Amino acid sequence: MGEKKLVDARGMACPGPIAKLTRAYREAKNGDIIEVLATDQGFVADVKSWTESTGNKLVELKQDSSGVIRAVIEVTAKK
Amino acid sequence: MAENRVLIIGGGSGGIIAANLLAEEGKKVTLVTDSPVHFFQPANLFIAFRGEPPEKYSRSVNSLLHQNVELILEKVTKLDLENRFAITEKNRKLDYDVVVVAAGASLDYDSLPGMRESLNRFGDYYSTPQSAVRLWETIRGLKKGKFVIGVPDLIIKCPPAPHKGTFLSASFFKKEKRDVSVELLYPSPHAYTEAELARTIEKKMEEFGNISVRTSFLIDSIDVERKVVVGMNGEEVAYDALAVIPFHKGPKIEINPADARDEDGFIKVDKNKLSISSYDDAYAIGDCTNAPTSKTGVAAHLGAFTVWRRIRGENAVYTGRTNCPMITDNEAIFVISDYENKPVGQRFSKLKRLMEDLFVSMYFPSLMHPRKFEPIFNAYFEATEPSVLGERGW
Ligand SMILES: Cc1cc2nc3c(=O)[nH]c(=O)nc-3n(C[C@H](O)[C@H](O)[C@H](O)COP(=O)(O)OP(=O)(O)OC[C@H]3O[C@@H](n4cnc5c(N)ncnc54)[C@H](O)[C@@H]3O)c2cc1C
Image (cartoon, rainbow over all chains, first blue to last red; front, side, top):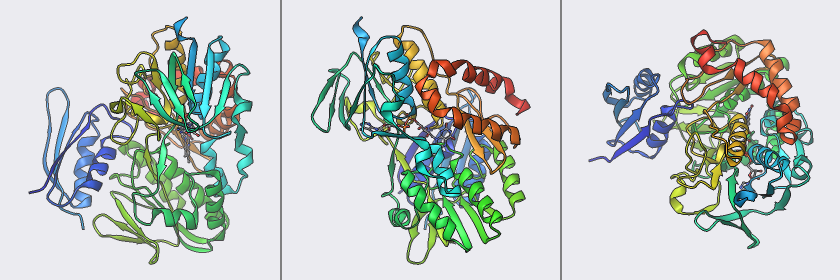
């Protein structure tokens, strides 16, 4: 079983939640789960294309009524 | 008045402006910093890609300070927020009524294999002006092949600086008619962290013809022997010369209580008041904080004004405003945002480049006389308010 890591990037606009996600990814290994909370609306599209182009798995992507985006990523592409 | 003894830690942009503002109105100000020289960091680019001399952009800290500021040239090793004192490497104890930490970010070249060797071999434009001179020698000597700029992490000073380096080096190779291409390795899915700006930048890069960008590229290590950058998914990019942007951490100062810093050593502040944790007699400004905005000179500058006002008893706040220039040889855009507004859409223009040159020429005088330049900066900030420019772009 991999580890689970929570990345809270709420309120972060510039340089944005991708900055914190890549930091968490650096520390992670295959099988780990990274959960990101963000409020930057650009993150919805960004996290989709980021997981796609890096070959990792986007397990869940949701936005609640208060606008908080929750993305759950399974790390699968590390060498 | 109780808060008469103000201690400022760090003689960079933020520290010097704060010291001068406070001294001008009669506060007893001590500034402690570990370097006798203040260097204008954006000029690293002019040194590395145009061969300009570092002296042009260096001044003694002393020459930039109001005559009433007491200057101590020592490194601070410890700050005790509970008991209101700092300790220097020479074991000097500095008591205060109010402290302003402006110690900037510290750079880390050791958490990525091969990064330090690469720095020693090619130079870079983040660490020191001397290292930028080294990079200029590298660039000047590169007759053909590929110059790679690698960005392992996005929490860096001046987020557009990797792109500035890309444009300026590509301009140099074009002007010299050299068969050298420039490749930017970038961790986010677009050529910039914000998608709309990224499109503008990607278009400009295409126009150049000798620039390529690899997005969602996460650098794992540098194989100095084989001259390749290795990505986290195992992909490799070959280079002939390389500049890697270092990791940024908080300043190397032990703080009591320890939880005043986050896991990377950045000082935890209220993002608007810039007070440290729950203390009302301690502030941090500029690159050393964890404020969720870009690490840029503008944030340090506006942070210094905010803290000066708060120390005077006004209810001033910092809005997270940024203004990071991304320049090519003859054009520019500005990354303008704040806590509430994402970066404003931009068009490259020659006029913006001229404005950037004007800011550069105003830099040292505006540190020395912050109040004199305040109306000019305020007019600019008002005219370029992110909420006003908004969807319209600029
Ligand atoms: C290549 C590059 C390009 C840039 N371009 C731009 C730009 O175009 N526009 C812009 O606005 N910003 C730009 N920046 C960012 C800008 O330089 C910084 O954001 C700004 O200098 C931050 O100011 P500061 O006062 O927080 O920190 P700094 O200016 O870094 O100052 C920190 C000071 O603290 C001192 N210090 C550190 N530790 C200690 C200690 N323990 N004890 C005592 N003293 C200590 C240091 O010697 C230094 O003098 C750029 C940066 C780089 C590297």
